[in-house]
Each structure stands twice: as C-alpha cells, then as structure tokens.
Length: 402
Image (cartoon, rainbow, N blue to C red; front, side, top):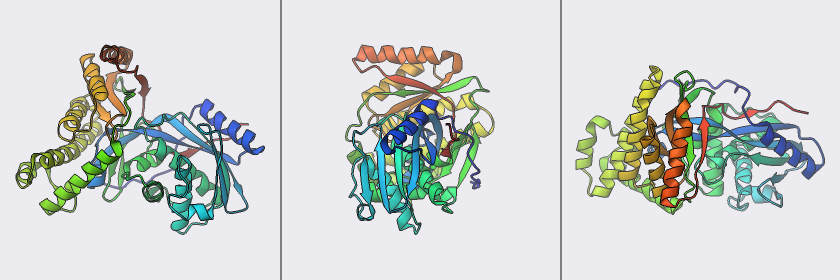
C-alpha cells in the first residue's frame, strides 16, 4: 500500500454546541479566554476487526461527533483540566506525569499525552484545558482516542512543536497503552487523527502507511446508520486480552511474525497445523477478515459501494461464530437491520457490546432504525440510539468564534 501524505484537515464539522460548551467551560473555570480550540472526531471501523494487533488491515472513517478542547498555555510545568463530565478539575505536575498510572480516570488520558510527548523528547508547556464532547462514552466509537488526539493537537500547537501528523497516532497510542494501561492497537488513534472527509482510511497496521479511499455515500444514495446497541461491555478487557494472546500463540505455532502473514489461499493448510478448534476459529476470523478488508477496498476504488454490503455481513458472522465477541443486543440489531432492507450490517469495535453499523439506502434509514427499535422492544432491550453518518475529517484546530 502506498503511503499517503497527510495535508491540513478541512474545517471540521464540530457542532457549534460542543465547541461553545468547551469555550464556556474554559471561561467559567479560568476567568479568561482560551488561546484556541481543537477538535477530534469519534470513529467507526467500516471493516477489519481484531486485525490491527495482528499487523493486518483496517478501514475506519471519522464521525461528525467531536471532542473539543479549549486550551491556553501557562508559564510553569503544570496542567489543569476541566471536563463537563466531572464536577472537579484534574490538576497535575511533572511528578504525576512522569509516573505512569499516577493520574487515574479520565484525567489519565490527558496526563498520558503529556507523558508520551515528554518521553519522546518534546518540551511540553503547562496548560489550562477544558473539554466538551458529543462522542458517547463506552459505545465503541473511540471517545478515548478522540480525547487523546484533541489534547495532543492542542499541546503541539501551543508549544509550536515540529511533530508530523504521521507520528502523532503512535504517541497517542503510547499514552493509552503505557500510561493508562489499556492495550489498544493503532487503529483508533490513526483514524481520529488522519481521516479525511468523504474517505475511509485504509491503514496497514504493520508499517502504518495509509491510503485515503473515496467513500462517497451521498453520490451512491447511501448512508451508514450507526446503532448504539446500549449493551454494556461485558468482560471486554479480559476477553480482548484472551483473543490477543490466542492470536500470538497461533502465529508462533505457524512460524509467522503475525497472522497477517497467513495468506487467505493458505488458510486451510494453516488451520490443519493448529492443535484445537478454538485456535482454528480465531485464526480463521483474522485471516478472512483481512481479506474482507482488501476486497472492500477494491470495491470502493471501483466505485461499487453497494457491493460492500455482503462483506460487512460476513464480517459480523465471523465475529459472532469464529471470534465469539458479539452479544445478543448487537446480533439482534444486525438481524433486524438486514431484515428491514439494509445492504449489509456488522458490529464495529472490539466487541462484547458497543455499536452496529448498517449500510442503508438514504431514504430507507429511518425504516431500518425503526425496525431495530421494534426488535429491541420485543426482546426487552433498552431502546437503541441511532446516527446517520457520512465520513468526516480528522483532528483539526477550529476557527475562533468570538
């Protein structure tokens, strides 16, 4: 895959509401104007689940939902952060920053970004920050990566740091992995930082090269319906770690650096060399999912957007049956969406809860959403929430609004 340069992002479609909330929180908390405001999006993964830590391929796109950070520098090495989800600010200095895990909760993601920048050799100014967001928490839409990316971009701009866009996702990921202690891959941070409007981000997780794939849903008369399943993430951390460990063991047994190195054409031979059915199913998901990403990219390059639907549905079946990471709520949403006429549907995210995306005809999205709501009511599940999404740009500095 040919690496693509990351130019300046287009003006982000952050809602005036969330940007104004961040500005108001800054003014009320610090009794001054912020120096600027920075926005980072949530994301959904069109296809390519649990392939990232197997050195594989993913195809996310950014959502119009945004996390906005209003910020100003301060002259000392101290950071104060206010958030609309917390009654009290988080306040920390270099002693807390330089000890991973010292700052906990949501403030740990901010401290982790400062830590990652300092560890990489960058001089990071102290700062006052205020955060507002319309990226829902715990829904698998990368609210943590949006927070990290918005804070990272704010601090880089405030300090005038020479930090190329292509290097930023790895620093944001390091903040989450090494400071917060969450074992995420590189996809989320890459998507929220590097995506472009009207495109999906084809990311090679081995060398981190990207290609911006045209994903013009409007022109095709289509949209992506994002359905928050309202399912709590059940055992997600332990199960995620278990799946990751199984993939690493399988790669070692097969004598390859990562499961990405097992070609789809050689899958049957590889499965025959594995010792048990569970390991075979885990490997089958990763290998076939990588191929589904490549097939989806080929269709999008050819402008054949409606034809990706069956690949999305096959991805869900693989996550359900081979990787075993779905739950009844997401399965119900997928089944109801397909029965109502969606061209394809799948769970998106790490699994055990979170969101479903459905490829729908634009004028049919409300009917699909209604069908999912009806199916939830019949099963006694909480009413799902939905969003009709088009691919949005990644992290950007917002123009100043007086």
